Length: 329
Image 1: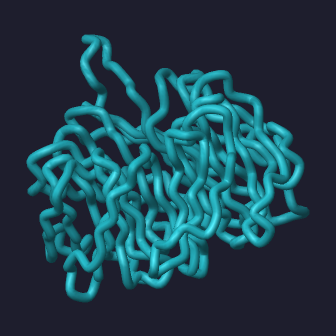
Image 2: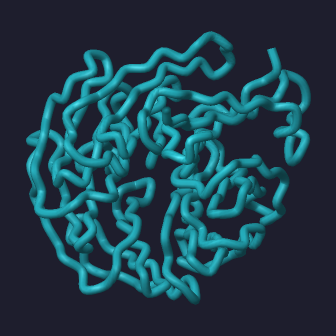
């Protein structure tokens, strides 16, 4: 079985707790359900549902109470015929989930019914998907470095662009006016939206840039690279303000917490690093057993979901994810 983990970091009602003290004495809960390893985890905009996508060709939706300790209920979403590599929730609708699969389709699901409501077939194996902040468009990237923009209302592809360089991860800024691509050249391409014309190339790292995250306050973007560094960029100036250096392996996945104070980053190192955004100081490490595929903070609470290349005792893929941040009952 595959698992997903969620961690809850919840300060008490008294004076604000920050830094290492915020994360001490918190528990990790394990969620089992998938038959093969989990590639992606994502919270809905209300912070009460978590979606997981797996190599077993399914997605699952989990109802997780941030401060509860009852067993999480889950719903299986079936229909894809290849790995569900990435998924994302509508930022304006807590029950609409989009999934991208190697079967060349993108599907929209209603989390209340567990049914696929829309589907579009694209030209390649899809590996990246992200919503525009206003919920109007979805961007999808495939293994052939082609970007497709989908109009959510019609659920139809309205724009395609093929790039001549390796495109790894994609993101809009918080206003939807800028679109970012991390590339195998160690750069971040800054595009104007909706024209997708290049405005600027950020020479960000000495090796390929793998992942990107946007600070929810809109101040920063963070980039994770094969050089084992995470760089933090001021969006208004497009200048690098600091780097995070705790990891020793290529950075696979990064995420800002809900108020932009902390950033989680992970790689093949057997821990997830949590650092202060404004100082760059590493304040906590969450132990893990394998290379990490996905980390994502809850948009309302200090709960961190993460999924890795776990193996079970039979050395086959373990379909689990975990969540960090639950208080000891």
